[in-house]
Length: 616
Image (cartoon, rainbow, N blue to C red):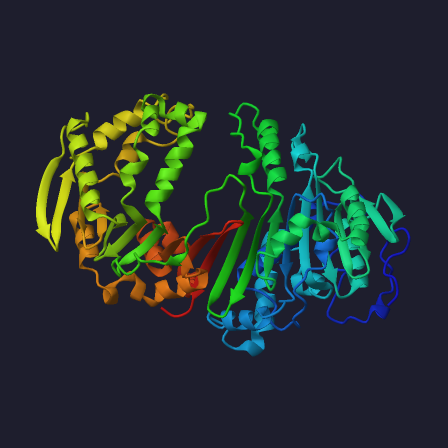
């Protein structure tokens, strides 16, 4: 195939030898001199955004032949990279089959024979929204894009604002594999325009261009072999150097990280956590000089890296997030299947569960006792950290916060496995007694007791706390509605915030059948007490689908019933109901539930977030 560019980077007038009937590069017209380039500086960002959103929206190209699991672009990213992200539209490993099965759950994608066309339509519309009408995905991008797209950035601690807007410092690089290198060159030349200089570096021809909105930065591009590179000139040169040494892919940190997530994935992101933390501190000082500084962390509190990978599954999608554990981290957990899901009612809409809650609270209190900042924040109450506060919850096993929705009523509470019911009852009674001596706005709470199940439900009624809450918000430092540092945020009325609190604030609790239950009302407590394995959350297919994807054996988990949560949001706000209507609503309706699971080992912390799809 003949070279599409001459040495002046002008488009060759005769492109007939390219032999591509479906691609018309010429309509992406931009005048050479004095042209308006409102969209020029956005196209690189648009390309990455569209690719990532497409992957996250299940829009992988299922009819493209599956490639290898290992990305070739990580070898171009400089070893000094702080943040790296990639999208695999070539669907490595089992991802081709999984994407096809996954998309079949959504309206319009049941017919796999038209899948490629429908994905092109979706990507085309999305790309137009991001990049403007000057680019067409099918016409301008699809013909030359290969199966891998990636972005890298580094030296982020040097990023600073400049007068007139914009910023200086740092470097960024966008990489893509290309199946038609000449078409890629023609596209980049047409979009980025007349080069200010050309040079040969490491065997590749680099074109340096001037981009509106990025004044002061040397932006360059090249296509070498089957890889296209666009970014800061220094970054492109570093990428060409990196290919000889393996770049980021050859570093111990990156290699160790990617080994902790599934090799076959749709998208992956990695970050050098210490460098990113340093950059965050520097950015806050550079862009918000009047803001309070970010808290400092010792070296053993910041992981060496963090990595995440998105995978398609036939019945959903998963996001794995892994970070190594530092020497100062707590001991490894003891993963097991939830013992509380079978105790929570089937009306549970959302839950968050922590295993060994009592032990975790004790460790947190011990750590806080050694932290000067924590002690200073507690003020006069700091001495409590030195006492037996931690042992106050030594009876607590696994604990869960749950929200239920039944007959249009929302309730919530805490359910905790009680290793010793007698001790749990004693500790809760001690809290009840303490409240009688506390200086509460409405005096002592009104206490009622009701025999129920195998025990007694105690309800503490604190009365209407809204006036006291309003006064407290007003007295936080700044007048209502101001943006002062001590008051409520600008535009928020303390009375409106207080109105969110029920007119009668109650807490009901009981300890029986091996659990302690605290709820917003007696109905929640009764619902938990009455729950059987057959009527429990654990028996629901929506729960099972999400938790099975996330990992049923874990150290902590979370669950959301998506359909009920969406209905609640629609009822609460008419604008949400409008936004979730039409085609969007049809897709959202196929999301059954969300799940998350966390597992700790002596070496790492692994979190998996899952989206389960299919019929309800």
